[in-house]
Length: 181
Image (cartoon, rainbow, N blue to C red; front, side, top):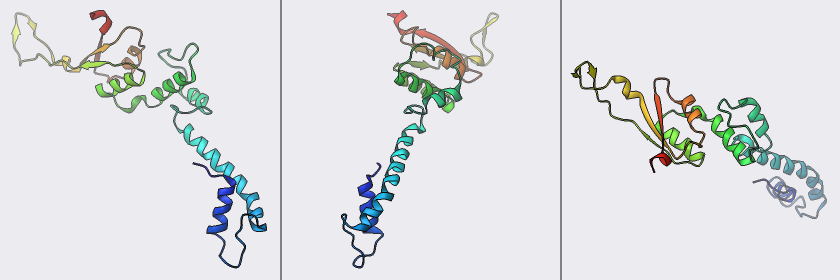
């Protein structure tokens, strides 16, 4: 929280000036002299407070265009059209921290940040040694890398970012909750 010039002046008067020999009154000449220097300090503190909100693309306003320029166009096309400031901030933040972890919990949190609730199932691998029924196997070890993602509907726009961010060996299968109702 930034301070006012008067608060800075008063702090300088009482914390930096020795008591007794120098008048420390807010109406004195020294206070008026210090007031001239306190104004730029207050402005600097205010600017620093403003920049603190710009440190993350999720809260940035003044630097949001710079974050978007660094990120470039969205490979999934989610930045097309007229987006509100909040939507632009959410998209930039999601792309800025997108590689933070590629686990089912990460994708569930990513969907929650976009306003959706999803579930991800990792089915048990039906591999039992070398058991075969005829010529077909019951399953292979590749099924260890299958995630079944249940999305609320087909318009969430989460399929592309999930495909781009999922681990290389993982196969995502999408199903939709509205189709099962």
